[in-house]
Image (cartoon, rainbow, N blue to C red):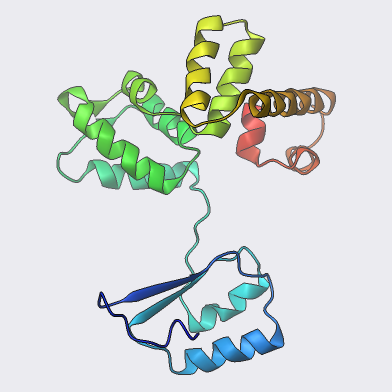
Length: 214
């Protein structure tokens, strides 16, 4: 609050971010925040980052922004909107799916990659080949690709995927540990393949999208 109250010096607005806020604020913290919100500084923007449901009680005095990963239908809406702005372009359905998976449904990455793909695509049509060539996979998705390549003894593909980890500074011991975890999950999925999807996700502590790749 002491940071929020002074007026900004170098710009018209000032943004103050509380990272990793607790799920529930203490009575003392609640009192301080609520007192500030009764008469907030109009030139300050206060951002509270929290996954806690109880922290959402402040929503009635704020604007709630959902930053969770996009769903498949939401990816299409976002991408269609981006493609409709000049230079206008189109994207193949398979390319759209590959883009969503490689970026792990993260909006910020999708926006950046679409701008790059539009610039490099021929005739304004983004193909699966364009996505495979230009979009670096998210580390999580790259791990799925590497696990599959190793399992199927596709040496060239495995080496190509390894370059992704090397570029992002993942050391070899960490990579071995990640592969071990992934194979353990694959074994769990095989042993519990008759279980309900929600039970499997809970058992392996993964999302339904992660379970799909496993």
